[in-house]
Length: 467
Ligand SMILES: Nc1nc2c(ncn2[C@@H]2O[C@H](COP(=O)(O)OP(=O)(O)O)[C@@H](O)[C@H]2O)c(=O)[nH]1
Ligand SMILES: [Mg+2]
Image 1 (cartoon, protein in one colour):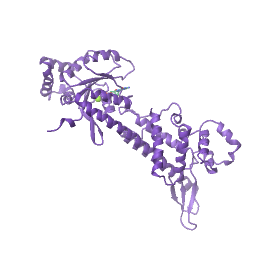
Image 2 (cartoon, rainbow, N blue to C red):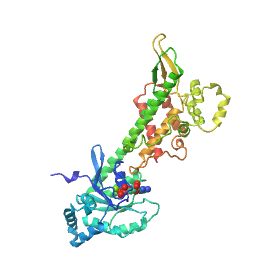
Image 3 (cartoon, rainbow, N blue to C red):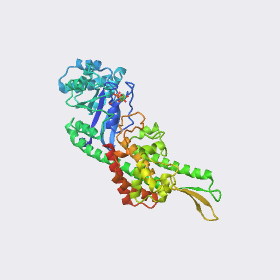
Image 4 (cartoon, rainbow, N blue to C red):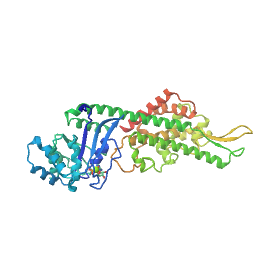
């Protein structure tokens, strides 16, 4: 005999068409594969979306079609007047008798998981006025006898939440406002707590699920930080080589290796973004676009540098205190005029804005034996600003992905208010980072504990940005 203790909680998300049922399922199941549509009635079959952690189902949600003929269904139920303890049998009788009836397919689809034991989550749109037409739906749900709660979603800007609360209070012992597009992780957990209260038997498993889900969430942060660390390390230490046809490199060959080098770093960035989108279960959207952000804002563009790079002043302070600004470093920073050092530095530091010359990423060297084959080599990265641009872009991307609702279907657009770097990077963080950046740039081996240390800096940054 199967033990009831191992049955995970199930919830059927039901309501009128186009009230955000699928959006709520998407958010609660942490799944962006749920079909969401502007067209009412586009969901015709119930669909199950389990939230799984390490192969264990924490809970399962059913997305369902909206009510279509609630009044008729209710009229049928009411013809069979029975005491309250028998009402759910009448609902089952309705399902059995109308299995082949085209007209009631939507109602049957949505009632089936409830009759099979799922708790009810009834969804309404609090931006539309309450109306009596919802009463038949709520009455039918009451007939099932299953534990239930109502969620008020605000799709539009108008607000009828108070009147909805009064009406829903007659039918549901628990009524909550929940916006699937904007809910953060805490609101998500709070809702789970409420869902647990629906059924005494669910309190223990749902509470256990919440703990597991929190751990899972923390792991997603850690994995993201690890991916960003790997990205920065690989990009800064990358070396590109090109065999030469002659003794010396032609201008084209120099151009070619520079181009290959940049392409490789762009690839590293894109791969890391995809990995992070996968970590946060947002990989579905990748079918629509390459990556969630930065469409058209190249890693090596002036625009990207001015948004994500350090200012000259920050660069000089960071570089100098990190001991990394040697003659060569300064050359790479300022386009090859070490002579600027001295009196001109004051003027530079005084200036605002970001300095960036992307012709100056790293040296291009001709290597090889005297008479044998020669090759061109570029890398590791020498430019002092590049690590910050790369890192800030990665953190921006990860923070957007980590806080993105799984109910959003629109293509993400790059959008940023005030300076992004200021939100998380103060001088002391910058100095800590610089220590690692110069190590990564050196191409020397990076020890496990150093990588961990950098990872924890990134983890803290990511959380600070999201809060
Ligand atoms: N702005 C906004 N739009 C929402 C919200 N919830 C749902 N929508 C939109 O409303 C439409 C219907 O949502 P959907 O979840 O498919 O509703 P369903 O028919 O009840 O499953 C979709 O275009 C959603 O993007 C919300 O909280 N805010
Ligand atoms: Mg739907």
